[in-house]
Image (tube, rainbow, N blue to C red; front, side, top):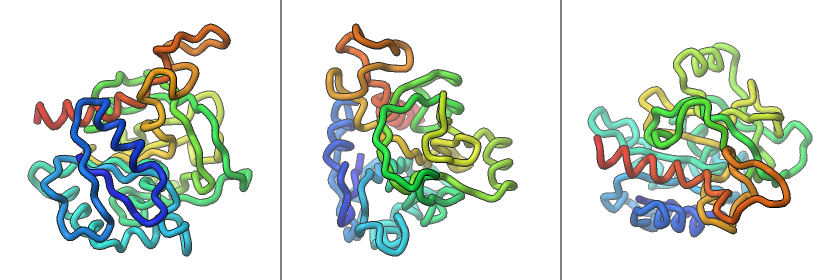
Length: 240
């Protein structure tokens, strides 16, 4: 599974570790590479690519490797699974692999918190190991995390079941309709604002999980809800 690094990417090593913990092999991809090195899936990690100059993700969209990713993700036969996390989600919207756009959080501040999500679509390449309606806890850290789109685009996403994750309990950044993650029509491209790669290892992620959210006496084994995205894509690759 390829993990792409742009100038300013922060979480590429975390994403690579998540891939390994899920049972996959992480392959480092540089934004200037001319090939995808025959990887079976791609992760665009979080960070501040190109310092978020101009607009978050806008410069990265024109990286040489992105043309290869866009073409592979749109392939009519066996399209490449692509996951965009935080800044990677922003890149996917700028590349028009996903609709909508990202603007600054409603409160205009950077935020970092453990966030409860509801899985709305458990049939994508990246969510098939979850169940629809399942609640999970994933770290959220962003400044430009407010997802926006025209009303007809939002209606289309809802009507086609392409809202993949929704903020549960509260809407931390003002995203329209509480949307935390979406997919393309084929379900192979998913973008989400929270960071699943930071919830993959016992003792190093959130203090609780969606199925075990309590305070004080939370067991060490909780806080690994993010691993499901990476095991999901491996399952989809094996079974397709």
